[in-house]
Image (cartoon, rainbow, N blue to C red; front, side, top):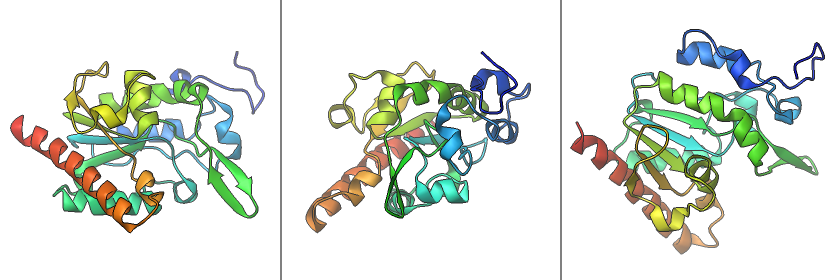
Length: 216
């Protein structure tokens, strides 16, 4: 129910602009209060990229740096993604970057704000924004980064480890390819594991690039 209370939750559908452009969607999403996450976030972190992008890369949620700067993938995981994209021969400027959830969910640990995985209620509340982004961008492939992003589209039984690097049909109306989230590389136990994980991410992105070339 919508009320005059400034803290009332308003479904994202109520905020959708009449003309679905990336800019109009970004402006509308800045006012989103579809779940409680906005209350403790600095700002909405909407997607970034050209409407002519052929790739869309979808992560879980913004992190601490993204929340502060208001842009997706500008923190440590974003730097890993930049390196992987470069190694795979994909220009970041050719990719539309976004997240399933547009507000940072976190817990306080001393002076630090640590990532807290979003719940299904947050994913459902934000889903209209992702759907609208897909409609506004002329995509040929959606790359899902990590289990949260992949399962938000395919269902909770989907396992990235079993299906990564494969181009699959999806309910989005656009093919998908799942891979690991770059943040998982940061959690690798040693240099060897980190190198292997990075090579796996690069290989998956190369598979995505080949799909676009094959369908050109």
